[in-house]
Image (cartoon, rainbow, N blue to C red; front, side, top):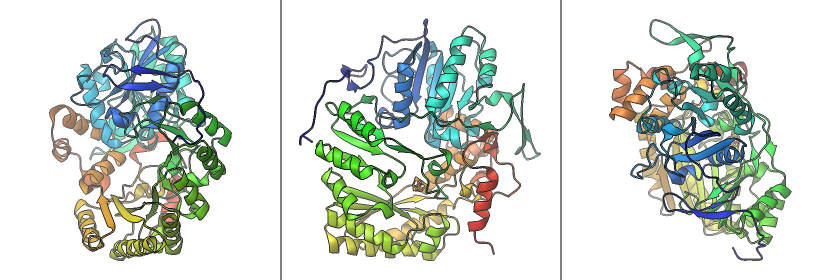
Length: 556
Ligand code: SF4
């Protein structure tokens, strides 16, 4: 870390937070904060632990945007059980009821439960229709808003669909100009802003079974709401913390979007055109952060696709920076890239073949051959990586027993080439496939819990016999819940509230509400069916996605 690092003075400050953490602010230091006053007050909530929120670049970016905005005061909120801060802001411990707006940044469907817990701890009614004049406005944005806002549509007042820098300026402008107006008027004005979805102004027509068969907007709201993208700014860490999941790591987004179009991947579909951050800008921002950060995390959906990635790494190497990266696109891994990463301190190469056979990989839009995967493993090991982590999904549409068995075969061969070329150990991460809205696989059924359990157990049996292979897997039960939350509609709001406020187990809450989880997650949706998330339009059109689905799915 010390090799030749250039240091320069910056306007950053260190400060001890309300909970005694020593944080470093890389953006303008916080002004005196607190609840409502002359300026608009926003409580920005990451509905999970501090350590996770502080390592979430979307949350950091939104926070940085809000604290820099004229006329706005913003404080952070986390859901850290046992922190003594529940229902209060992180910076000053101000009760959340005292803010004008509580804004949730939601990246994972499972965080919906904590949204309701935050509202309960704040003393606010969980459903928007029950809240009163003078209550803070409850909004949410983030990846879940892009995908499907319906499960918590009855809980929030407005949904910001798109990228924060495109949406926040018009959102804040409305709030500032209408602040003295009543709640109803503010909400109606927000509904006129492109990219803002106000669920209370959208009626849902249901069939006898209670399923949505039509949508209509009230008072001139035209549907679907199109997501707003292309604000043009890239994200980076605003506050460094030793207690973040990525401790004291300066995260910097080097590109947004991905042109690979893997058919299971929502991130690869919703962001529109791919944008790369200029290499000189990356280096300049890293230089400014270096006196305070221990490591730099390069954030990109597909790192190897940045046209100047090698130049960036060479510069970072000459500055003595320790680098961290997420997964590498398999085809981009060659001796030069792997060597640069190892020289920059990267010790684990994360590669995502996703499926065991070439046939299934082609079907999911990841047409990487076995030979290319094995070459990448060999190159990474030869370059000096200590670990090669291979990601696979189970329960992919059309997956057969042979596809699953082939994972074990591929892993065995990967360990052999890794050992022959260097000393890397191969680890395997398995996660159940979850069909996500806005992707060609949105219509596909999610595999059942029992089937997934059997497949994971079978692979574990085979691979545990290999001494240098380690296997971890995500839980089938959690995956099924995620699939229900990803694909369901407003009927899920009741069960979410039951779980969060009464501690009712998820499946029992669904039963009590008469919601059929199998119908939502476990079946193939029909071509003519209205999908619950069609109130919002983001990413490619439904027709384009459906055509892709029809083309790739095996038919009897
Ligand atoms: S899985 Fe990776 S490479 Fe494929 S579309 Fe998503 S981000 Fe791009």
